[in-house]
Amino acid sequence: MNKPLTQDELKTLVGQAALQYVQPGSIVGVGTGSTVDKFIDALAASDRAIAGAVSSSVRSTERMRALGIRILEAADVASLPVYIDGADEIDHQGHMIKGGGAALTREKIVADLAERFVCIADESKLVQTLGKFPLPVEVIPMAAAQIARRFAALGAVATLREGVVTDNGGHILDVRGLAISDPQGFEADVNQWPGVVTVGVFARNRASVCLLGTGEGVKTLSF
Ligand code: 5RP
Image (cartoon, rainbow, N blue to C red):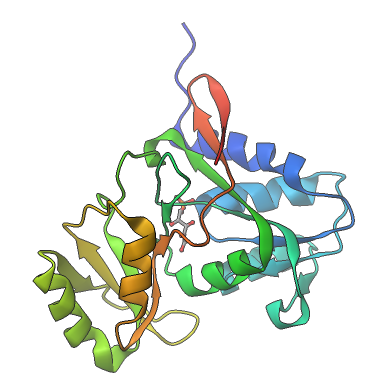
């Protein structure tokens, strides 16, 4: 019997599979994280020459630059055919929790430029209901305590991610104890709390496609 693939191998598989969504000569939106690192490596090693990439983090920018991929500023690009990124959780409608790597704000900005969001994830990320993974929320530091009180009023516990300052100078609250049954309503609601920069629910900018790494290979979920 074959040995089951490791999580790292599943990430490599979906990173490579995402290449099929990259049009030669186009500008690609690129997310952040260990799964996206696999995509970046696959892109750099492939013969699929692109015009450049719009990056969602300093981490991804550095990796792409080191591999010779040209970086363009989001402000200079009006739209992107595709944005490729990982997720911490994804449900069966393509709604996601993101921000485990603290890059959620720039990820949402770049995702918003894209016609299609292709999520790449191993099968451990597929859930029925979002919320088991602690929800990252980027906040303006002076608002963190009040935002934590608002989550407490919903029966959840928000803790400050110690020692983390985002690429935008924000702080991250990780919120435990949520079961997000209405991702769109929840995202819209929390987004309006003063001091919230970005909530890590991606419902408005949900995935159009998820390439899910499984023991049986890559499954394509379309939403
Ligand atoms: C970073 C993210 C990542 O996409 C998410 O954390 C998944 O990361 P990984 O591919 O390392 O599991 O949202 O802010």
